[in-house]
Length: 229
Image (cartoon, rainbow, N blue to C red):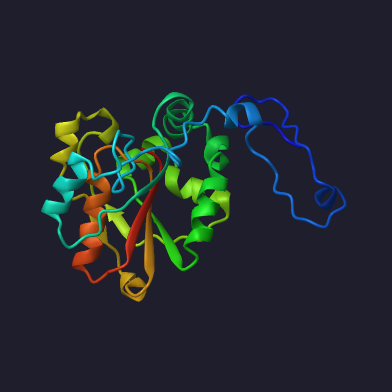
């Protein structure tokens, strides 16, 4: 059955008769049931309809109202799979900052489910800066899409030369200047539905930089997804 990516225990699953005799497709598991049950899923919780921040009422949070006033031309809507806490935070940090590349496939099911829900969408992972790439050796978002077998394009550049986003406080994040630029060849994708993909949504500043850049260059169908919020 394989080993769980997180706890390394063997994954044991009960197969249906259809799966047992080969009549139905059975995807190989990547996470055992015990670890899966620890995941802080946002689906089914009361969340902000704009960014999926967990809250008491299903209305736009203060941040999304602020983004709406600042960028009235954009649709304020984002999808996130999990709360950025507990095991999800630990696993993403292991993957992203400690280079545990095995974990690139941990959220394959979530990404594939989103792709099935938006079959016409074309994934565009947010690029990291040259300094981050040289230190890390990989783009964490591209790695997850590759492991999920999801086709993506990359026509964004990242010229950010300041400190890491993960080391900034909220106010410093919000004041970050536009880091992205469009590469040659982006024009052929203007009529397509674009799905921006990042690992974590914190303030929304990075995704809104990307969304506004695309909008100003003619893209009109842009949505976004992150693993965590």
